[in-house]
Amino acid sequence: MLLVEDDHALREVLLIHLVAQPEWTVRAVADGELALAACRDALPDIVILDVMLPGRSGLEVCSALRQLYHPSPGVLMLTARAEEADVIVGFEVGADDYVIKPCRPREVVARVKALARRVRREVSHGGTATPRGIVRGLLTIDPESQRVMVRDQAVKLTPTELTLLVVLASEPDVVHSRAQLLERVFETGHAGYARNVDCHVARLRRKLDAAGLVPSPIETVHGTGYRFLGSP
Image (cartoon, rainbow, N blue to C red; front, side, top):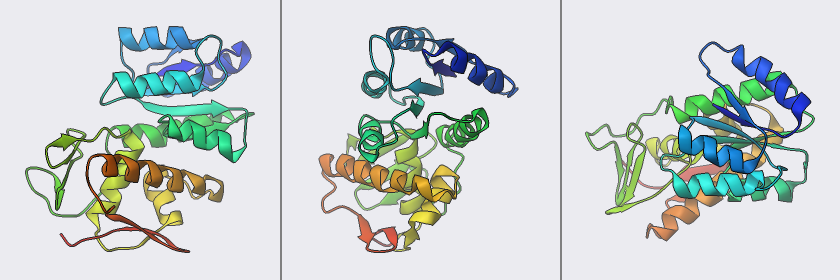
């Protein structure tokens, strides 16, 4: 795990709580260039990334990670800017989740644990079990190898996008409310995170559309949530 935070006091407090988790090995750096260098040395499973950093910003680092690596790490953004537009920008460059400063270390640990499970693909799903994973028409999803294909074209997804797609595609024609998706994908019931669902669905649709999966199999059920169209 890599912690990227230029505020020395916050970095030290977060380190104390993160290294207290016996399953995690944590490295910490204070700027964007050092973060990318650390990832070149040893790509972590999770990056906790402050938005406002010296040199390269957290947004630039996140974007670079998504371009350079596949599968790429899970990315949790730390932001002091709570405006919806700033949160959306973070999702647009590929962030999986965010925590708004000032933050409680326990909240950060909880969000990282949830993200770590998505990175490890620990999501329960039904659907048609085949050697190729979940097959829905031209779409093939293999959670184990983290591969998503539309025809013969690979689709690069973040850990959260892949988990979201697996949940939806595993239960075709079932309507999932935002609250249900928050619980199953983000492992939280906090209504303040509801925007996470909409942003990730929008990104997922764009990526599938760019791969030629048109019209989108993910339908908005107005006032409720989303469903994946089609039968197994």
